Length: 225
Image (tube, rainbow, N blue to C red):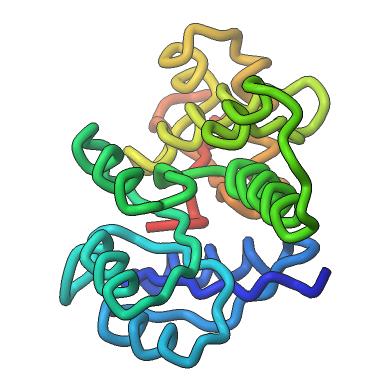
């Protein structure tokens, strides 16, 4: 199966570059291009070379859902994964109604997008091979795909996403502060923070409080703005 060609639609240059990098790291996926506006996205989609769109909802010249509606009106059935900070239930439901296949909240760890795109690729391959469903349970899994987390051993994907959300909400967190927010031990919080730092998604700096003693390690989110 050839690589799936992905169009990243994101107006923020830092986030767009992060998403492009994520896609190119994934086996079986290739980033075909980046569009910063709805108009540019529709122009690139008109070429008919895109297999999947990673679509932000808030674009400078329109809403992401309007891009999908315009695509469908033009007969373009390319699959769409929403990658957005829009958390309104109405937005999630509207996306599902017009055929958005996945909805990923920003900010997120690389593993989150990896797991969802891997699940998408599996489902797409099964469809293209003519695979049939065995029972109602399998139908339910197809309509509501559950991703199997492949985060490093000892880490939980749900906790990792919570840590990412914290880092995205404020600049500069220590392990102690993250632990207090999550209700975990400092050692546990530090393991998640160190994983993100090792992946290049969090930046380690030193925090000096002006008092005597050793400085604390502070972590900031760098993969997205």
